[in-house]
Length: 340
Image (cartoon, one colour):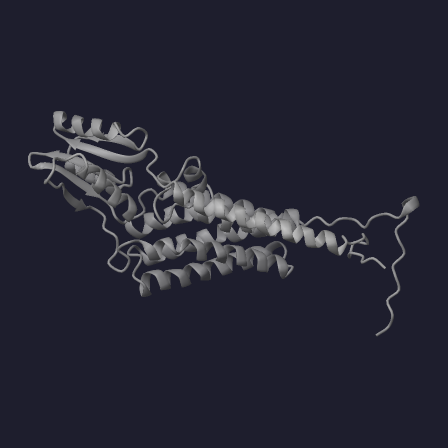
């Protein structure tokens, strides 16, 4: 006798299920490798915002040298060193080259990206005569507890997983309406407080306002959790898989947290900033190291994901397939189940 699913439909034969598993696993592995390995293997500046300042003739030469590297840099001109340093603090540029009587001086912000700061040093040094070195000033240095940004970069995956776990648990627990929204809000708030306590108070990887960091972390978790729960409410079980792939797979790989969004192949870098992990990473950098500069766009992006996800969670209902009708339009008779 063939197996029957809960909807009354015949289950696929074992051979077909075996073939589906054998073929599906390599496809998933290939997709994961492409998503994570391809951007990592193609890391290079793509219109990376940098500044040039100083005397007109010398600054023009520096600007031309950067422009000769194709679309690697997006050059912004500033009047003097003070204006260039302020642009770095406001997250308008990742760094700036200043033409001075002593030679070029490089302003960096390792807190924005240690990888980019090192890249700019190599690019500027390559334009100087043999035996000379450019003076480097780190305008916004990375914290002493995380000088290479490793701990900060590793925080994207846990936040993505926390959001997916919250959305999945709300769905599997059968919570609906206000209870589902309340569970997501409460869980996200606790995630933000816990993550700030670990990253700021214990590891020293964050140096900004503690409560602002907790809020940014909590908002990132809420955006991910509400997205998963909302998709599940609209699409049923398929929504869980879609939400997990969107947040953990694409969002984490395209976040640019370990380098910078402008270091990823385009349009991957721009797409990553529209997903909760990438927006959350940018928001966290802004509130942790730059006093909130550049926080508006990622905060609005996360808020949009959270609001839309909560609305779908409260108003949506997972669709259920109706039992297959028997011949003649009548429902099949339920099979008798022996006692015991």
